[in-house]
Image 1 (cartoon, helix red, strand yellow):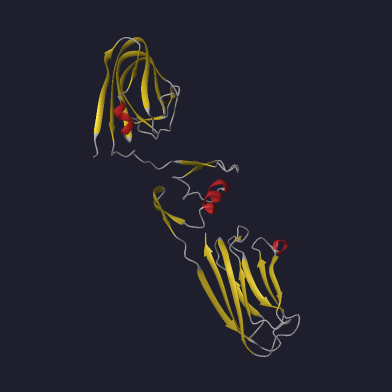
Image 2: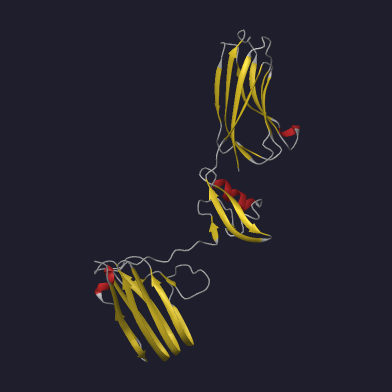
Length: 295
């Protein structure tokens, strides 16, 4: 059955002391300590161990009475002629817990409470920091929707591309939120009897996922009637690249499926993907489908 447990450690204590917590706390999912100090100078170490034979060592905690987000710490708490109320949530599982208090002035009251059924309070981090060896710098999550064209933030958004994309809810310059949703591929179909099969122009940053071509009627394609997929770069002809090339006439090929979707298949606004035959002398009827998603 769920239960709560509490223990008074010190009441207006004016001497240094080390106090071990009751064993009931090892059954608690969340343990919170509250310290009320009056003109107190001294230190506190929150220590634990996972086995009776282990040595005591400082354990991680988070301060809970701050307006700003706090990060876990194992540092010794230091007070200098301070008065106030401070609360700390102890993180992790510990077979035994103790509080080591060294006092030089003032008094301190400490109580500990725990619950077997409580949940630690979650929070949304305001920054994400790369930890995969690639330095993308600190990324401001709250503001990244408004300035997602900066290099670090654009890199972060691309890392999320496989599952999610987002739009910013804003009122003027105030960001109200960041809505995440799964991207939907865009399928574009063209048909004809000429050599120009398709020209994909999303006019926005996009990810090319694939191209399908079917030659349905007409005489067999001749040797060297070649299918090409070319990047017509928005940055100029110096950056045009042939992405795919296939001789459709030897043998007579009627169906082609070209997979894209890799890390190298992202293109900028202004880029155009051109799908064409070098020739279509027999006037064969084609159907071409390009698949992309906006990022």
